[in-house]
Length: 509
Ligand SMILES: Cc1cc2nc3c(=O)[nH]c(=O)nc-3n(C[C@H](O)[C@H](O)[C@H](O)COP(=O)(O)OP(=O)(O)OC[C@H]3O[C@@H](n4cnc5c(N)ncnc54)[C@H](O)[C@@H]3O)c2cc1C
Image (cartoon, rainbow, N blue to C red; front, side, top):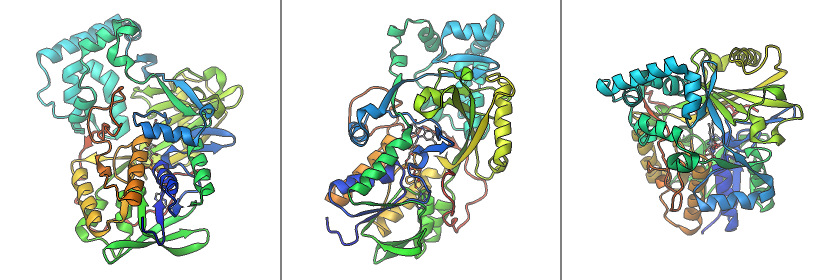
């Protein structure tokens, strides 16, 4: 490794901190710049008045042995809890076991509705919908309209913010490919030991006792202890290029604006914002691709309630169309260390677009909305919510539309050609639906590319389509890479000039 200035890492989420940690193993010089005041990115743990909660819930599960080893190197084993996974589906006042259980489903649906579901299934088998190119057609053809509308439609539409007949079917085909109604019923009736597919879904996962943020706070301490710099509240606002490579970044932090020279830049900031930060500017067609990449955003309202309203699930999917909330976490079920004696904290999750009406509502209105919905669902008695906190997380989900692959490929090729020492990593950094483990793996491989010239292609991480949390062999690189549907692209052509990096933290804390 030939080093003059060392490596600048943009972002102190799992990918950025892993990259820094790995580079330091090899004695490299590392500076990490994080726009937010806290580390952990989307995998942070938010703390308010002594309550701790996640952005979503973050299970620590991986098939990548070196990621597993990393987690246990950073956090001693006794700081991890092994938690049972439990989640159910809430629909019209009843909780359905997940995976489905025939007795429970029958009891909840009632004989009459169950008969209707079977009738609708028979109809779909005899006369399947003609158009199965979209999610709705594909799933209802296999399960019948009624079961589709109870168990698939509403939640999917809440998550992606559009009618299910606008989502391409291949995602459903990939996720649900081995599931037919007959098989689902069989599974539901079989004793547990015979449920091969179901038991291979992870039933336990690891969880740091104070939440995922604990991992990344500890990792930050370790990076600093080993001589790396981690500056929070510090934006990377520009990446400067000269002579066919990046030579420096501009950062804007507590000490004002300054230029920091770099031999390499590892970037976990959204790839679209990276492109718009490059100076001199990228060509118009590359900026247009950046401007055309979209995200789905996310908002949690954490409500403190008496412990009597706790439930054993880690989360409940809310399929009920009468409310806006999509999922409810019970942080007390994730870890007793997140909550206080005699109470629990429920996280009501809303899938939104940044700057839509819900996103812009003041916090007190959102707390009132979440409280009213929790009461409406019958999960708490009216008047029992004691306090509430709102956390907004922009760019929680990279959106895959018909043009996203072309956009990412164009940006990627341009970066490789014009800025070979700029290395996109992670989730939004690569506009890929990576979980922590695959985000971290891209960072580990990038560190090896920088230190040893290893020549790994990080874009091969998490691309195969047969992962879905099943036990298996290999180095764990394989993944779904497509754990999201293809949604329609924007109808208006992308503007040529991309947006400047939005100068606000990715998450409010
Ligand atoms: C609801 C939800 C649930 C999830 N559940 C799980 C789970 O159960 N298990 C799991 O393993 N994964 C889960 N994930 C995925 C996990 O959160 C991500 O894979 C992981 O956080 C990605 O890490 P990252 O470092 O690539 O990106 P991020 O976490 O997004 O971190 C990027 C960092 O870069 C910073 N940044 C951005 N722009 C700039 C800039 N210009 N200058 C400086 N800093 C900048 C941001 O502030 C941020 O801190 C979940 C995600 C969501 C949305």
